[in-house]
Length: 209
Image 1 (cartoon, rainbow, N blue to C red):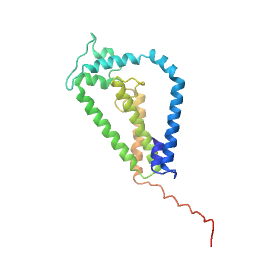
Image 2: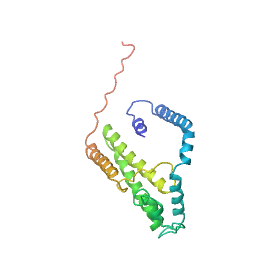
Image 3: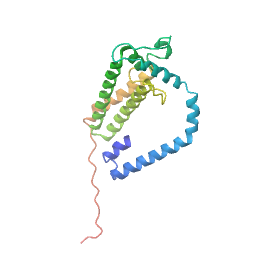
Image 4: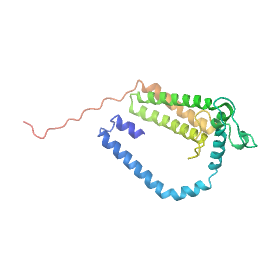
């Protein structure tokens, strides 16, 4: 993503289309080669993974959810006993079960609005360094949010990352607060600090007369 932004803003001074094709072709070739090599290992690991049990419970929990109000759960045990870390890793799934899908819509809207505003602010910064640093922080928050939401919807494609400033854990909160401090610092100084204009290269003519 950072390379895409850098190429789009022509920071390298290269042909945009060729650079984009080169990056994404190499990226997909690398991903395809990696997936072919570890495919058997992924199947073995997935067969023994406890995340499948969590995904099954979450899907059962969400299948009885209502739009507003508490949903139904068929097991004899309450939802809070079936999922560990219900107050952090599975907080969104439990909130949907307890209060309805309206909670998911409100939470997703707030998160999307926050990330969209952050990306818009990043792209308006005048300094290359400020844009790279701020985009790195916002992309980190974006990946945390996407993986957390997918896991809480029963799509256990990977272990859930913490939801920024929501999930419990001193280490998670400390790291995210540090990242937010860096982000706010770039927003504060990036509006006033800009890179000097690049000097145009003087091409010496082959023939002089």
